[in-house]
Length: 374
Image (cartoon, rainbow, N blue to C red; front, side, top):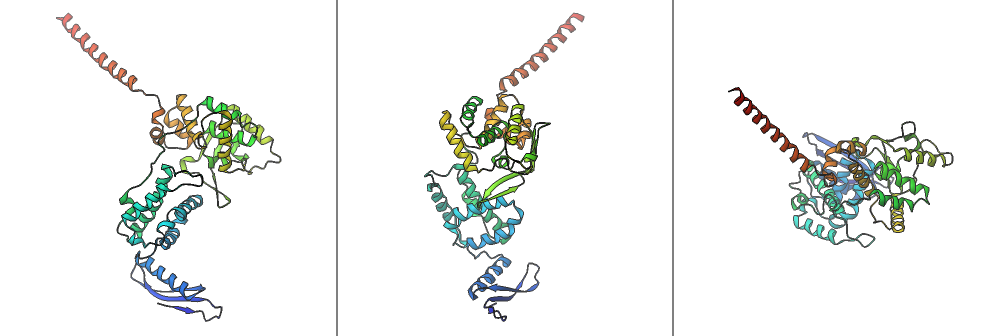
């Protein structure tokens, strides 16, 4: 074990050592290109810890190991989101602690700090965001348990904070949406973006990835097979959230006409050109502007998707049909929107009573028939 100055004379250092792999084989390892002896020794130390499953390394160093293991398996935008949360909400608190020394008390203190923390607008983090942050830490420690011999996942043992779903699901009725959309007609880009979100139930990322070639005006359909996220100032286009999300959505006739006119008004529109070259923050700003001018309650952009579901439920469509349109599993629709579906309990009870009543009438008629024969 040791670090040596490179003989080529370029001033760099290299490390050379022997280790035993998981098969028990002796392997010679050499790594070049370090600026200092300290960097070379640090790399060797971390490599040997990783190979031996010894988590006597800092959380920050283990995150680099986790990245090598997991990044190739995840969509780029999924990884970027994970990385942003871990870099800003976890590493500043526990990054310098050794993984095998992170205690339950450490997790509790970290959770309490998150609960007190405020975002750039001076607001507390939402319950769903708190739960998401905790889940990211738990997933890393779970990886350490599964593959690197960490004894226990203390984040899981302590338990999560926050909630899986917001306590109250907000949405607009059709009349509320009509008032809102009237106030954003002055901006065609905003108007048509919100029309698709409300009347088709697309996710924001799916909307932003739309191009001319995804529209079929013969059948009035939109092919949803991509999602766009803006991360680090760059547009990253990937497949949608799940395989179920890849779908074809049929537009109402009036929306198809609106979109055809909208595209005709874009100068030299190419087939693969983004129809909505905007950001999520732009849509948030427009939601605020339209809500204030129309006087309707402010909801999130994503709540337009909830609004679409509530409208379809009101029109009498089943959970299976709605799930197919939104790219969800039907069980998710049933669970998340159960309170919006009309109750059938009374109808069920009446039907069961009728069955019992018919059975008793049949028995009574049979009894009378037997008495007539005698």
